[in-house]
Each structure stands twice: as C-alpha cells, then as structure tokens.
Image 1: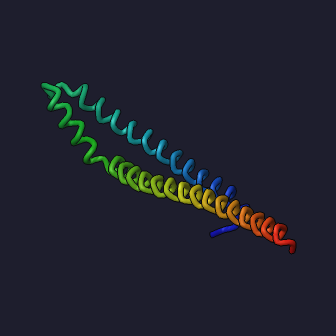
Image 2 (image 1 turned 90 degrees about the horizontal axis):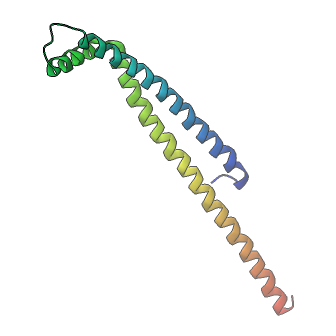
Image 3 (image 1 turned 90 degrees about the vertical axis):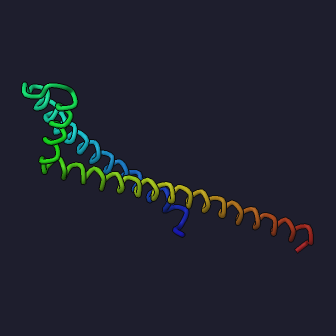
Length: 123
C-alpha cells in the first residue's frame, strides 16, 4: 500500500488515463459512424436494390470489405477493454484510499485510547 498522501495524485492520473481512453473511443466512434454513413449512402442510392432488406445486405457488404472499417471496429473493441481496465484501476485506487484513511483513523483512535488509558492509570 502506498502512503496516504500519494493516493490523490495516483487517483488523478488514473482518472486522466480514463479520460484519454474516452477521447480515443469518441474519435474511433466518429470514424466508424463516417464509414457507416458512407455505406448507408451507397446502398440508399443504388437503383438496383428493390427493398430495405437488399439495402441492408448491400450496406453490410460495403462495410465487410472496408479494411479501414474493420480496423476501426477492432480498435473500438480494444479501447473498450482498455477503458474497462482503466475504470477498474481507478475504482481500485479509490477503494484503497478509503481503506487507508480508515486505517489511519483507527491508528489515531488507538493512540488516543492508549493515551487516555495511561492518564487514568497515572503514568
């Protein structure tokens, strides 16, 4: 366990890491939305497609062959896992900080109790 005074900095760093991952996730989501929008546009204006099911199938075909889209989806999955891990680490630090504060309070209470006991005995 680290010193009590080091927890706020560690917690802030963990929160900053989570914010960085969130920012990366938003950028990837924007890129994915752009790819999906382009696929929607390509299928919406294709006159050979007769119904909605054919348009959805065409959209899927366009996205499946787009390597950049596939890389973006893989990156989104990776960043989602990374965000979950960053969140878990942040919560772990917060919980450790709470425990460390409780232990410090307990130690102070025990010292006060010991001091009061000695006073009663006359030492």
